[in-house]
Length: 230
Image (cartoon, rainbow, N blue to C red; front, side, top):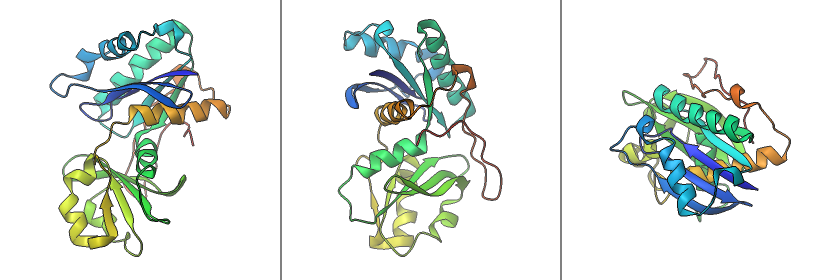
């Protein structure tokens, strides 16, 4: 199965080609240019570099959020258009789930939790907490200090641009219990593709028009989003 994936949850974002869970190519976007101006050009250049025609792609994947409204809409609309053009299925994947997958590849102690933090606005972060493949805490948006009050007791690996931004706050609160992925802000398109492949093989077949952005709300409020892939 050949999967083409796109992440627009951060200003740069990324795209990737994955075949049978192996990443053939993964490219970061140019942060100096708006995503609406770069797409679908970034995807076309990746396909050309790998000498693959769009019609050879059997599955499309896109990050559904959280992230900026404009970035998510641009990314989802781009992949919906491609899905309709080539008749391929499209799977939506949470960027926080993808961050957790990337974090699991780190050499960490058994039982270490993975805290996925993405920059939100005005000092907030989008966050979720995982252990292995299990989600311990559902996505929320909150102040870093609020999240850290409940994270003591066992090692925590932090990953994402929100963890990079608030690294010193995390270290001050958790000390040696906290560690950070390397890189702290990894590319996500490859992991998004792999999760989409798992979801597709498990039977998920949402129509492309059903893919919607994942909007994360504060603790105690509803979280609206698409079907979760794992």
